Image (cartoon, rainbow, N blue to C red):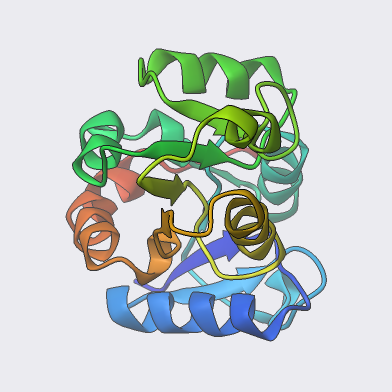
Length: 190
């Protein structure tokens, strides 16, 4: 069975390299909905897994394009335990005003969470606090990860910024172990 993970895409070469390396490590193909090649239209698979942190317009677009729906990462089994295994630290999400995204983040019941683009914002948090570690809850290198790193380094130069999830062996293992569940919980929507 040819499994294709589907991501948003980016022109950033670090993003593309991050996705390519992750896909190779977990034994799947990959495609993008925007900005990057290979485009979803150019990758043939038996099942397409839209791979997003949470609900939002990019997730909805990937589902519409592929005709497959998979719960985003914030809805995966044991995701809270996985994230907490990376801490203690400040967890940083990109941020989406979709109510389902906000609900998924609050269900994590993790105290130290901020966002890059919505309230409570990373930049505001760092005015008064410099955590020992920042955990970017993003899959790849690229624009969002780099922006999180820049904001942290500008305010808290001694704070450790973890690598993105695709580059953490812990996430690669978590994903491999979860792949059967993802396949069972991916459904056609057309």
